[in-house]
Amino acid sequence: MTDKMDTRAPDLRAGVALAELPDGTMLAGQVGAEQAILVRSGERVYAIGALCSHYHGALCDGLIVDGTVRCPLHHASFDLQTGGALRAPALDPIPCWRVERIEGKVYVRERLPEPSAAAVAIESTSSLPRSVVIVGGGAAGLAAADTLRRAGYPGAVTMLSAAGDPPCDRPNLSKDFLAGTAPADWMPLRTPGYYAENRIDLVLQAKVASLDARNKSVRLEDGRRFNFDALLIATGADPVRLDIPGASEAEVHYLRSFADGKALLAKAAPARCAVVVGASFIGLEVAASLRSRGLEVHVVGPGKTPLEPVLGPEFGRFIQGVHESRGVRFHLGRTVGRIDGKRVTLSDGTAVDADLVVLGIGVQPAISLAQEAGLAMDRGIAVDAYLETSVPGIFAAGDVARWPDPHSGERIRVEHWVVAERQGQVAARNMLGRRERFDAVPFFWSQHFDVVINYVGHAQQWDSLDIEGTLASGDCAVRFKKADRTMAVATIGRDAQSLHAEAEMEAPARGTASLGTASNRRPDPGRAK
Image (cartoon, rainbow, N blue to C red):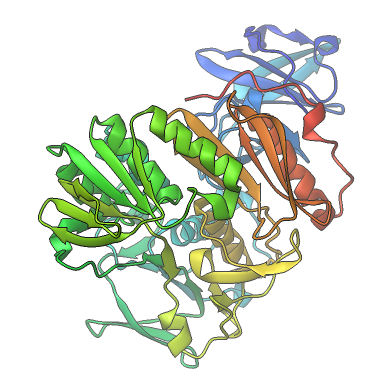
């Protein structure tokens, strides 16, 4: 593990003295017109692209861990030797160049070919499933299909998605897309031609009616059947819906799918005022995006403090203050009693005008398919450390899966985008016989105007909460502890420290040595926007 130590940009083709690159450091530079970094790990020196393939985070501000580099923005991971994307949210590789050492200097030479599926050996094709069916068109489903092909799996891959659109960048729906700063063509995770090129049969508007676990088939509502040798259930979660007196379905919006996002965006364009019901992460992100568009925004929530169950009261009050300083108005300790056209009446009798009403009060896992098929349940679909359900050959990933988390020592289920993607990747490899435990530390990020929260770990409960730095300065790390053990770390303005916290939490589960404390590192130079 290492920090970046040099931000110069020399021409790496001209050579760099090895003495200028101490062990465990990174050096930013150029290879022709491309940004690159040199990384020294022991006697090995690597040359890789400088920018993450997900949202172009500066990898020289990231972290080197066990032959990989991790992005400071969303914690994607890349192989130093090949440039291959190893962990979501990045799915595509970064450039990689050959490095040559001559008389105490290192020279960057030709660009190496991207890692291909052919380079990933599958020991025995006879033991592979002949066909894989993925139920779900979200983060976990796409990550699984992508991983199968990158691993060289030759069989049939079918994705059955109830949505009408291909998999999209769901975290962005409540952020830049709703704010109007991300165009619609940014949202699909893959180009239209990707699925055909990779022999992934993506079936849209395919609502699965039943799962026959014994005979290994799924049936759609329209009667079509799909047989499988291996199945991934990645059905995600559905928004919790409220039956509000006086409100029609057309007057109340939810935000879960790309179709939801486009409908909400169209309604927001001419609107002047909005009511957001729910002071959760999704509700507050929607509030920030709508306020950024110039709407008058009211947030209604039953609790006393936003986000208190996850972040605690002090952190929650800080986030509330961030929103209030931008003009968002809060109505806490209240619920919506009635909607009459553009008039929203709260439980205390307060009336608020609204051209737009958005509900963001949480989600519930879509587990009925698995439940009716007789799979073991545990407030979600019960899976083992390899993400396999009680039925061999059937796996579950994402919002629906409850797994044994080695970091907390508990069985947990989380609703994080990156976790879903990483579980899809691990489940896919295990379908191919890898027997890889899912041991990634949960991670998510949330954006509130110019305040970005990175959260690693899982602290459903905690005994104490330690704040290093100050919330008001936008430069802090908050540790959630239980019996003196750090269960989770939330940071603002400290991306590198978030990466260190993640790696330190992973170390015991992976049997590696302690990696030091993030508090001993230099503060981040700033977060890329």
